[in-house]
Length: 315
View (cartoon, rainbow, N blue to C red):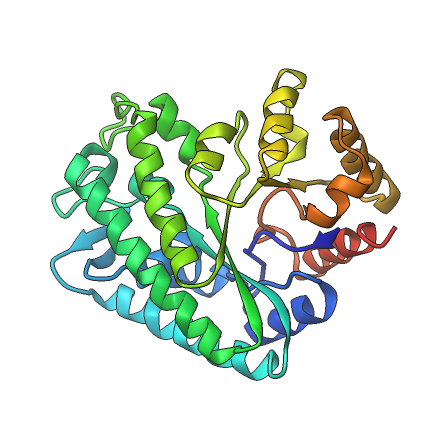
């Protein structure tokens, strides 16, 4: 059993956070520090990775443009700086290293088309976005590997908005209604394109969502090798679905929240035993984390939470 964080962290001390996760976690990650500006958060970092699509920041959020805008260029410059820091701090590091990227459906539900409204409203734009993200992600993985050559890269695709996309619960720009639900075959195709790009670049693709009712079979079918989720949102009726996914070979990475380290371990153990799997089968495949990112916590609290998760895996 290993410990990691979801990705986002508080404050602006990027080097300090990188050093902390490398020292504390057995699955360290490239942090996102949204407090440094719009290009440093989940959506801004993904906008900077897009290949062949311009983007810029508007009052309503990120919007696609005909050519790279100033904010997209700043996001790319900041990521290059972050990779410089990672290369210095991870010098000689061997082992798994996780990077995160916003998934195509969360991006489509968040970013706007050039003439307004969400990308989600345009079938062609949705497809083009997934292709652009997949290409940019593959290049990103190759760059991370160049800088930390002994690391094995894990790519976590963040899809907090996926459930809303599937259920038709993403509001239109006017707020008068919601965008139509996107059907599972199209959702699968975009997710598969991103997962395949990560795998093709030599990384292990996993997916994270902190929303309820995780579409487990869809995510497993799209090619992700592990699913990271908020254990506190799992209902009793979903246990069979989680057991089926685990039995199929897809790992489950529960997010657990508790100030008591022993209680966190008991919660995780009860979950897996309730699925009919013992420790011998699950511990080697399990990665524990907080349920969601920690950007809204204080720096001290965020570090305390991650230390707690790390301690839990040693029990």
